[in-house]
Image (cartoon, rainbow, N blue to C red; front, side, top):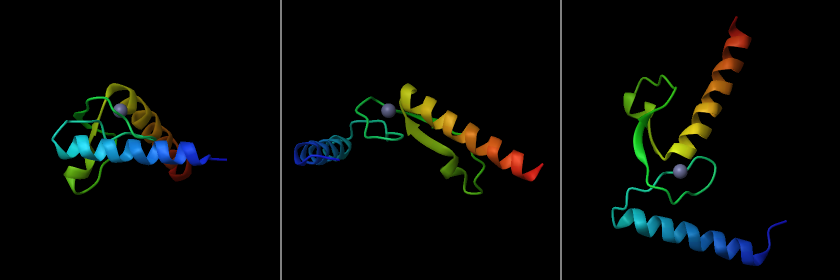
Length: 82
Ligand SMILES: [Zn+2]
Protein backbone atom coordinates (compact mmCIF):
# COMPACT_ATOMS: atom_id res chain seq x y z
CA UNK A 1 0.00 0.00 0.00
CA UNK A 2 1.45 3.33 -1.08
CA UNK A 3 0.85 6.21 1.29
CA UNK A 4 0.02 9.70 0.13
CA UNK A 5 3.42 10.84 1.36
CA UNK A 6 5.24 8.20 -0.71
CA UNK A 7 3.22 9.10 -3.77
CA UNK A 8 3.97 12.81 -3.49
CA UNK A 9 7.61 12.09 -2.77
CA UNK A 10 7.84 9.90 -5.86
CA UNK A 11 6.12 12.48 -8.05
CA UNK A 12 8.52 15.11 -6.78
CA UNK A 13 11.50 12.88 -7.62
CA UNK A 14 10.20 12.28 -11.13
CA UNK A 15 9.69 16.01 -11.55
CA UNK A 16 13.19 16.75 -10.29
CA UNK A 17 14.67 14.05 -12.54
CA UNK A 18 12.91 15.49 -15.60
CA UNK A 19 14.07 18.97 -14.68
CA UNK A 20 17.70 17.86 -14.34
CA UNK A 21 17.51 16.08 -17.73
CA UNK A 22 15.96 19.23 -19.15
CA UNK A 23 18.98 21.30 -18.06
CA UNK A 24 21.18 18.65 -19.72
CA UNK A 25 22.44 16.76 -16.68
CA UNK A 26 23.35 13.34 -18.17
CA UNK A 27 21.33 11.32 -15.68
CA UNK A 28 20.92 7.59 -15.91
CA UNK A 29 17.55 6.63 -17.45
CA UNK A 30 17.02 4.15 -14.62
CA UNK A 31 16.26 0.49 -14.91
CA UNK A 32 13.46 -0.37 -12.51
CA UNK A 33 13.22 2.95 -10.71
CA UNK A 34 14.24 6.55 -11.21
CA UNK A 35 17.95 6.99 -10.73
CA UNK A 36 19.98 10.09 -9.97
CA UNK A 37 23.38 8.69 -10.94
CA UNK A 38 25.22 9.98 -13.98
CA UNK A 39 24.67 7.62 -16.88
CA UNK A 40 26.67 6.59 -19.89
CA UNK A 41 25.70 5.33 -23.33
CA UNK A 42 26.12 1.56 -23.36
CA UNK A 43 25.25 -1.31 -25.62
CA UNK A 44 22.67 -3.70 -24.21
CA UNK A 45 22.14 -7.36 -25.04
CA UNK A 46 19.42 -6.89 -27.61
CA UNK A 47 19.45 -7.24 -31.37
CA UNK A 48 16.83 -4.85 -32.64
CA UNK A 49 16.90 -4.09 -36.35
CA UNK A 50 16.97 -0.41 -35.50
CA UNK A 51 20.42 -0.27 -33.94
CA UNK A 52 19.61 2.86 -31.93
CA UNK A 53 17.35 0.65 -29.76
CA UNK A 54 20.30 -1.57 -28.82
CA UNK A 55 21.82 1.29 -26.87
CA UNK A 56 20.82 2.50 -23.46
CA UNK A 57 21.90 5.31 -21.19
CA UNK A 58 22.53 3.88 -17.71
CA UNK A 59 24.83 4.03 -14.69
CA UNK A 60 26.82 0.99 -13.48
CA UNK A 61 24.13 -0.19 -11.04
CA UNK A 62 21.26 0.02 -13.51
CA UNK A 63 23.39 -1.57 -16.23
CA UNK A 64 23.83 -4.60 -13.95
CA UNK A 65 20.05 -4.88 -13.60
CA UNK A 66 19.60 -4.40 -17.34
CA UNK A 67 22.14 -7.13 -18.13
CA UNK A 68 20.56 -9.59 -15.72
CA UNK A 69 17.16 -8.81 -17.20
CA UNK A 70 18.28 -9.50 -20.77
CA UNK A 71 20.28 -12.58 -19.74
CA UNK A 72 17.08 -13.98 -18.24
CA UNK A 73 15.09 -13.07 -21.34
CA UNK A 74 17.61 -14.76 -23.65
CA UNK A 75 17.83 -17.85 -21.44
CA UNK A 76 14.07 -18.15 -21.50
CA UNK A 77 14.00 -17.60 -25.25
CA UNK A 78 16.62 -20.28 -25.93
CA UNK A 79 15.01 -22.76 -23.57
CA UNK A 80 11.78 -22.42 -25.58
CA UNK A 81 13.38 -22.45 -29.03
CA UNK A 82 15.85 -25.29 -28.53
ZN1 LIG B 1 21.12 4.27 -12.69
